[in-house]
Length: 206
Ligand SMILES: C[S@@+](CC[C@H](N)C(=O)[O-])C[C@H]1O[C@@H](n2cnc3c(N)ncnc32)[C@H](O)[C@@H]1O
Image (cartoon, rainbow, N blue to C red):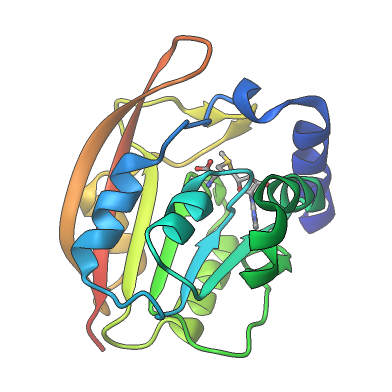
């Protein structure tokens, strides 16, 4: 399962340039706004899981955040991001791993996931993801998940996804996570399509 998933994403990033992927954002403004809304300190540990080649890290560095881990299952995506960042890449903690099974040597204050959790259509994978989340994000930690909404596509990158509204995401994550904010966004793909996303911001309460 893990090998197939990894192969899929390696193939995607080998075949496509950054701006050719449907999820490309020139500037991830909503993620940034929600991260700023948490009020975390610039030195607090942030992880972007399934970071791909997202420019979120560039914006976080520009805004002064300096304790950033980027995780992706695709080494091609990680290499492309390292290349884009140049010298600044030295300050990043890089992880090439499946999000359901990585290990880290420190806790996280803010966990960001845009369009990754929604690929976990298998319950065992969702359980493993949430186990990782709970292991590394202690109480008072912030969680941001962006997923396709029920008005959005049923697939992404040719793979089935799970659409989330506030009820479903809360049910899935459980009572340890308190919803602080949810925002709908219509993402315009580089090809001119519209994709309905829901962005959820949670606080871990216990
Ligand atoms: C739709 S893209 C989103 C990329 C990025 N978050 C963004 O918003 O631009 C999904 C990303 O998740 C990564 N990915 C998919 N499944 C994963 C998994 N199980 N563990 C880690 N990364 C995964 C893919 O390689 C890809 O970079």
